Length: 125
Image (cartoon, rainbow, N blue to C red):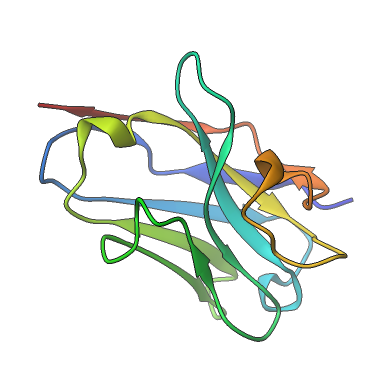
């Protein structure tokens, strides 16, 4: 069973940047379909960015051009670089792994089997 573990959340002002990290203990991230999702207070969980084992990454329209998902294979870590953060990006961010039917952003992450505990990102105006 894959256990994703996130880190790197925090509080920043609007326009700032953060980088989230996700490790998958005991597994090689390059062999995993993985993604980032987020849930804001009072809202449903939504897809942010996903990365298949091979192929094209996917981004939510709201983060295109500002967020970048990547894998660092030597570090065996998934990253989410978030630039030009906005108050509406405030949420708990979750790392997810293993998507047998594909790295869908939709459905609140129902395509993914394993989830981390989440890390809080707060953006102030």
